[in-house]
Length: 217
Image (cartoon, rainbow, N blue to C red; front, side, top):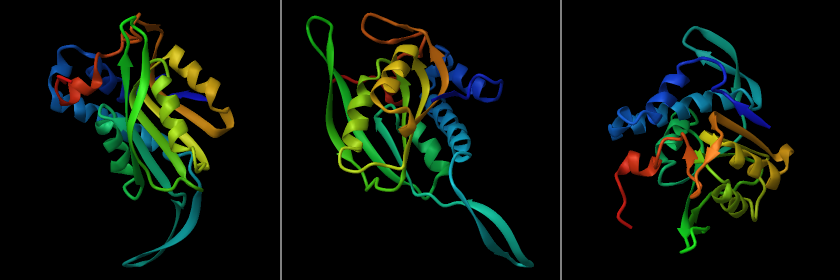
């Protein structure tokens, strides 16, 4: 199931437009903050899908009945571009555990590439809600490798995959390799085109470089 939270007009549109804007995105601090704010909006929307329990909360003047979330959450992101987006989720799910994965494209001389994963740090996922985030989804190859590594030994109750900007091809790829009853995919925008090197068009460029500076190696 794909839920496009950018379909309805909201302040989210401004934040997404600014991370795309070639002039505004040159301010790396604003770029990171906009990704963080987008993550906060996603977290709010996903929170509506969690399980809640009626709980008595004591105030200075009495007792108030409140419905509070009860499920344990693990937030996971792909380094490095996903970090500011991840922080937005952590601002709201401040009691969540965290998992981090390093995965990158290794290009061959013929222009093809494979996904290399060289770092994984994760708490137990058993019986928990996994929220897997990244700024962009192009082919879906990185998400396939990362998801399979995360759930190799323990299955979460459900996985929410959150993407700021996704390609149609990438969304189809995820839906193909993960059963629909195990995931919900959340996006803020869907772009229709990929270049020959599998970059999203119109996209926004290299999110990692825009957030933290151009890499040399």
